[in-house]
Length: 396
Ligand code: ADP
Ligand code: MG
Image (cartoon, rainbow, N blue to C red; front, side, top):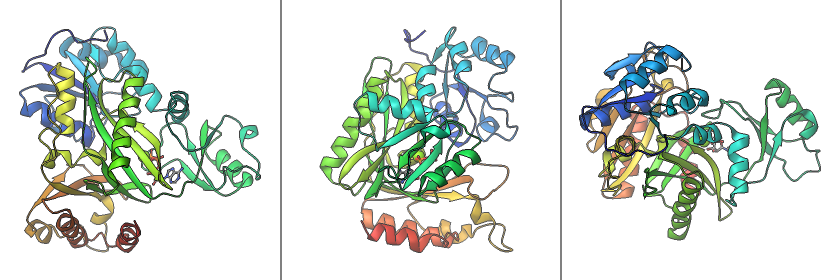
């Protein structure tokens, strides 16, 4: 079943594979519109499972759990990039699944993803696919300095190593247990941006505004909207993201990450789901990225993605719960700041680098939004990377 031929009205039960924070926001959006949600996630402390109508606490390939979804849900989506595409295939024989198993398969495998983009004529940086040691280029190659990335299961900069030479690439490839990897040229970055869009069953597309993203240690740290990139760059970013969605015949919410390198726009990677850099849409847009996901699944028309104000989003990682003796960040001080929307995901346990929440500062003036966000960031103890982040911003 690839096409939705009728609108699903509330209180229809919708299904989602994966129950992290993206799933939790999906549940919230679905509930706001009167739908029910079943979450499949093996984690008993799943943030989405905790607020869903039904939490199937089973593995993603548990046949009995997949049967429950088939029998109780009218349509199913995913928030977890590494969900087995076989499970999605299985579900799609009986109920509507979006995005399709094939789209998820491409997005979750760096080799398929990069190759698909390149073959579609879309701009990507230089890369080599590494199946065996023999595929690693010699030192004379222009690929170095490079980054070796495992093809599967990498996220938030995990499964990546910076490489200066063939020898280092061989060592890192062995350290990654000789899994298929992609070796990418390390690009000089002017800026990183992303584009989140929604594409429905009829092929209609709505794009959100371009977000300017600052990463720290490979993890998204700050998103600034509107991005400070030039209009012609932003237009190209939107156009390329739409081309990606159309080439994949993608149905659902898609996040596309871009590098702006020496004035050129290159696609970094795609995410077959709402994207962390689109969290600002919850507080700053008429329709947020999760509501678009619900609308698509239910066969409703897409909502307006219109941006109503400037927004600066800051991710809150587990590190801020772990500073010296202090167990809790200084929430009182942060909450005293006006124009701040705080989102905590209800995660059971804080760990370094784990996304625990985010906040968004909403202001008409983008400079005021940025200054306030940086102030709250330091109130919450995010001082470790602050100077580095600020110098990055100033160097733009
Ligand atoms: P993940 O799946 O972990 O998000 P990415 O490939 O997006 O992996 O890499 C995370 C971050 O690392 C990027 O946002 C960027 O800051 C940096 N990075 C990754 N690849 C390159 C590259 N080829 N050149 C320069 N920086 C890169
Ligand atoms: Mg990325």
